[in-house]
Amino acid sequence: TACTEWLVTSPAGISDLSSRLPVRSSAVSLHIPLHRFVAFFASQMCRYSSESGSLEAILGVQDPQGFIRLLLDHPLRIQVVLAQIRAGVWRRNGETMLRRGWFYRSSYFYDLGLDLDLFLLQCAAVLLPPDELFMTLVDRFELASFLGFAPPTPPP
Image 1 (cartoon, rainbow, N blue to C red):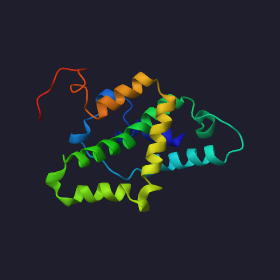
Image 2: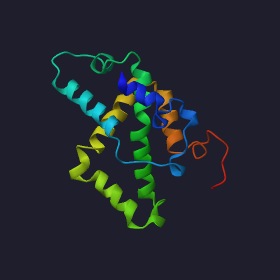
Image 3: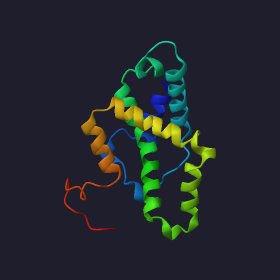
C-alpha cells in the first residue's frame, strides 16, 4: 500500500531500529498526520466494525508486525521528548518546549494526538514480541547503561 511504501522509503521511516539517531540529537515533531490517520482509521474500525478482524485484515497489510514497527517510532519519540521536557532536559529553550508539552497533553489536542499515539503504542504492545518491544523502549529512552545492559557512555 502507499502508506507502507512511504514508511519504507522515507527517511522518517527507516526500518532498521539500530540506525536511528537518539531522540536528543535529532528532530522530533509533535505533528505526525499519517501515523495519526492510520491510528484513527484502525481505532474506528475496531470500535464500529461488526466483524472481529485482525489488524492485518483492517489495514490490509501482509506483515502487521513489520508495519507496526514502522509506525511505532514516531509516537514513541514524542513520548521520549515529553519525558525529557518533564525532566528539564529542554529547559535551556525557555518556556517554548514546556508549552508544547502542555499543548500536546491538553484536552484540545488529546483526541487528535495523544490518544491516537497511545493507541499505536498499545497496538505495538499487542503485536510485537515482548522482548523486542522492551528493548525498543530501552533504546529510545536511552536506558541501556542505566539498567546495566550496556557499558556507561560519557555525556555529550
